[in-house]
Image 1 (cartoon, helix red, strand yellow):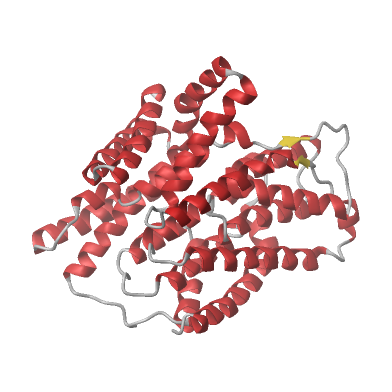
Image 2 (tube, rainbow, N blue to C red; image 1 turned 60 degrees about the vertical axis):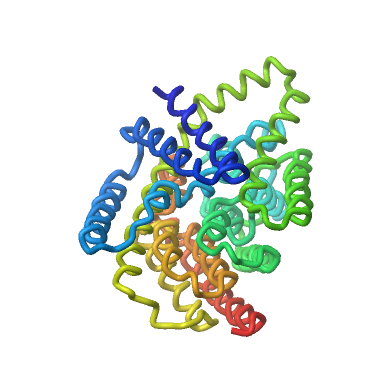
Length: 424
């Protein structure tokens, strides 16, 4: 069954790309295949209680829309997050060629320099291969001893700040999905600035800690960094030549093509074929939690928007500005702290606010995701940290809450500056 579900997921990926370039009607088939894959994997999905609630609320909302004569976009119901899933699947292949090598050392290096290299390594590789980069480093650190507060701070913040800017991150994919008219260059530049500020906030917060001089990090070989840069160049050049093509699709396509090209150069054809088959068969089904959340959250968002649009309800504001974006950012972060994943909030809001400025809206989405992920006890990052490294949710929340508060106010300043720049 796992082999079958992996094939369904990969077929959904391929058909999504085909639908975009040749016949958009096939996007519905791609969505259906993703749902079939989810059905085969659902018994092993974590956090079912939330998913059951979302499904129940979606059913109620759709029933109300149907009997009220409201319009329901059935294609969107099953495929609204299809491009987001495509990015998740495509970028996943990069793990076969872009996984950073850890240096073979008998004892862990320590001190301020080790902190810098560990933070940079997790951040840069995390921007492409996502949570895998954190797990690679955290596993090595955990082999030696229980993770210290300083190590937890370094790992969680280095990784979560990727969401401010990385186009290979699911957060960026969600922003593009629900705010497609955004200015990618503005979002990217502002996100990089915010990620750097997040590093400075973290460094100045811990620089006087006596434990910094004894910080145990884990060095990563940076020789494979050419892959993220090569991918970025390919995407940017292609987007410049063909500006109408979705960036999210370009990233997905080039991720797969680079894997197909580089893998045989590293491991020879036979071994590469075995690795690709193993990835499709065993690794893709491991994305079951993300697939479940994105598909069901997307359906829930469409169901709520059907009711809101059918009732002719509109936002109490005509346009987003710095003040309203700051309030929205606070609400999104607060919701994530009580267990509502950012993708759920974004899915509901994104289906209802097409008239707002998409660049400012996307910036707000990314800020909420990046700021909340490091701190929320319910984020995928912190749930992984709790389960894998024997950490308590309240401890992670306690050590990162001051950071989240600081980053919120920094983000507010950036939102006002962006709003002013956009003339809103």
